[in-house]
Image 1 (cartoon, rainbow over the protein chains, first blue to last red):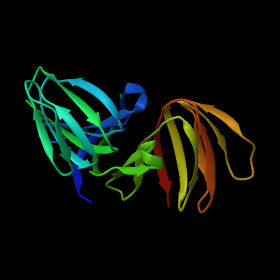
Image 2 (tube, chains in turn cyan, red):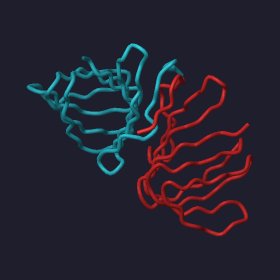
Image 3 (cartoon, each protein chain N blue to C red):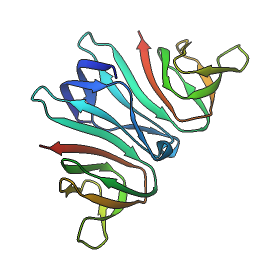
Image 4 (cartoon, rainbow over the protein chains, first blue to last red):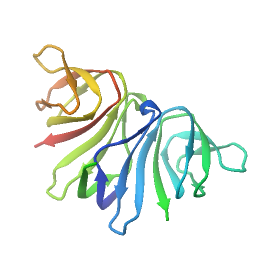
Length: 103
Length: 103
């Protein structure tokens, strides 16, 4: 069980899709931001402002990144999403993830 | 939007009831522990080891504490649960909560 040390966490959750996708925002001393989240099975499309690295800590999903075909990812795989774009997901099993926002 | 500063957070989520209840464990510099969690609508029973203070940050639920009748709670109400006991919940709307463990 890994930990993030010496961080700030926003108390209130980020809640999307009627609670099927939720996350907590973590702020690091160096100013970087990550979110730790849960996605329940379902189909979702997410937009990005900053580029993102999505690390899967549990679960299985299919993903369609911009300009790519659908592909299946399993834990502990991760995927990168460019800034100002979007990606489609078919979440197959409860997925625990860590999203890093890349400035 | 309130924050917990200078804390550690376990990266992996605590996942219960097929992901309908999930939480993140937060450790404070003084050794105290809280969890920030989400409960989707449903009926749940939880056991306690330590006494707990459950603070609702969003949502509505019915609760049955040991030896009490069912009652409805709304945000920002909270409830206390004794150590080594259990409580029943009927979560009506997505509930964002903060659980403090009392040693």
